[in-house]
Image (cartoon, rainbow, N blue to C red; front, side, top):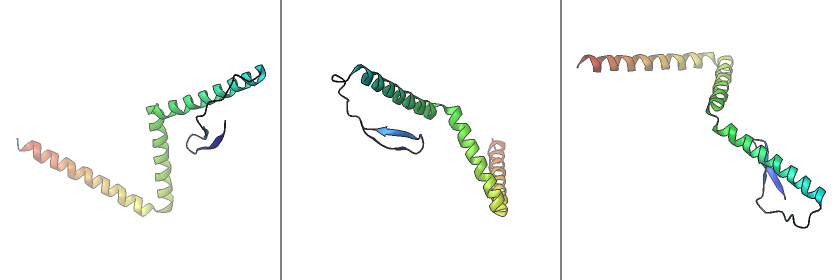
Length: 105
């Protein structure tokens, strides 16, 4: 079975989907093949679990966002202050519009 460079996100090698003929293998070769197959299955299951674990993905996204904000704070604090002011203004305008709409009823 051949492997190609893996997915950079999971760091797992991508294998082709050809079947290995095990009928002519010796016992030790079968054991080695079984161990390799189990390792590949474990790697695949770990990658799937990582993808579908929502709290884990939210934690990763939160840490990545925090690192980006820290980088922006170091490299361009004026831009970060402008973004923060824009967010505060947008929330204020939204709150004002909601109050106006609900008070007319």
